[in-house]
Length: 373
Image 1 (cartoon, rainbow, N blue to C red):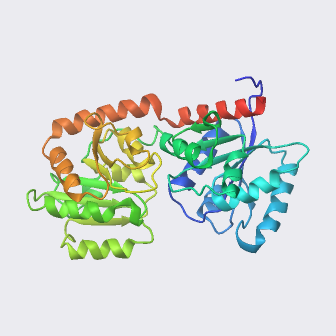
Image 2 (cartoon, rainbow, N blue to C red):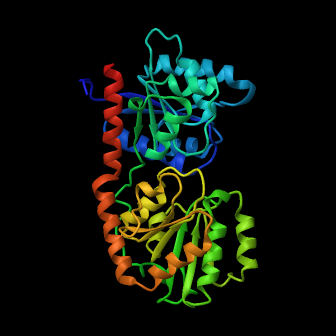
Image 3 (cartoon, one colour):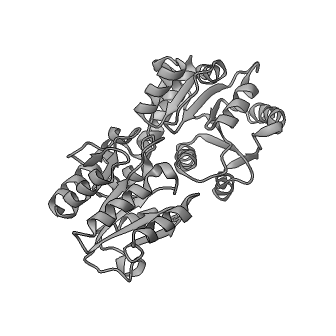
């Protein structure tokens, strides 16, 4: 794509304090790009999980509070970082840090290249400030094609400036295990021959946990040895717990809370479900499940249909439809041959298109292109 430069100095900014798919994408991207020889810097709130994990991993960190009345101070601080660290590419991620990043990059004699990454398919305003925020970067990265189309339509960004690069899966961590691996240690109270349904997601309303719980309750009227593992924590945990109790599912549902060792929990699962009804890009949890040769069930929400082909590597259901989800689950519970077929097809897809290295190579192509302009 024109540039002869091999390594770049990239600064990522993130105003979020949380630790969900977006923050994990930034961190995994930073790690793999550093391994490929690039200089990667992180600017984040010192209270954030990204900041603390970045510190543990040895990244050069710059503590910035992006929001509220401190925006001007953050802008001036960020300008100093850009100059002193000789940053070539500034990659912003959330709204607050994107505003600060855009303003900090303006008017610099040695102009830094500006990249905005959009992770979610949440609605975007079409006001002129928002249009400027999206039209001014040298490139927009999205985590899925659906988000790319949303940005082009809502804020008028030319499609040739938008690159869909889903989050890659580290195949050295996520690879096939037998579904009985670790069950005795992690699920000692459940039968060894149980069919384990699982979901890995932050506990947010739009992740659709309540619809999944309703489906499991329906299934238990027909299939006794079915159990559900919910991996993740979040702001609606108490509501999920109340739903479990209301449906009399306490003996069949485990809420694990947040888990760093996601592969160990995916290894227990026979079927992996994501019942989201809004905001999804291309979800990392389903790609990770497929990398472990697990059949998946998703909804027709956001970028999920970009990776789940109905009847090939999993099943798709309409959002907010527990009855359709129930039927999809029963189909796979009663058909282990189909589960194995879907799992192998999903594994093949991830190996061919969605590895961490493939993501890094795609990011490098974008960087090469904008630096050559």
